[in-house]
Amino acid sequence: MTDKESLLSEAEKLAHMLVLRPEVEAYREAEAKMNNRPDVVASLRRLREIQEQILEFSERNVPEVHYQHLVRQVETLSTELMSIPEVEAFTKAQEEVDQLIQTVTGRLRAALDLPAN
Image (cartoon, rainbow, N blue to C red; front, side, top):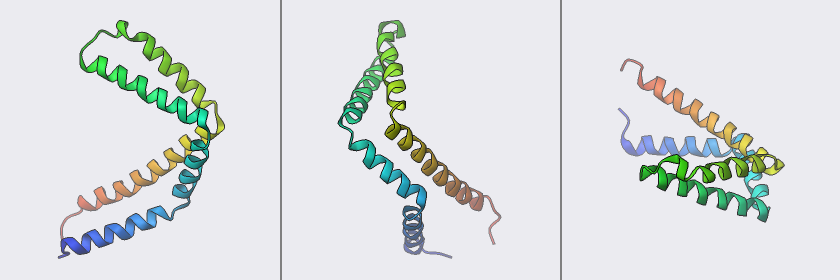
């Protein structure tokens, strides 16, 4: 039986292996390029602010008709952001990292479903 410290040590090794993957490197490069665009950073900040406002309205059960203009702003801003090559590259890289993590998580989940020896 494996003790907890050994398990955590192996998890750190796995995390280190993931960090060395080309998908993660592409993600970091895309993020850096995107963050070097002040206009993109400002638009992303504005997008998050609007999304938080929408969430607050939703949590307070305010009818959407009262904040529909915010929903339209999010749609417009999202479309504008996705037309910027750095944002598109970042989004693609993020999806690839997410897929890698989901694959690893799936393998772990599958291993948990195996009969114990």
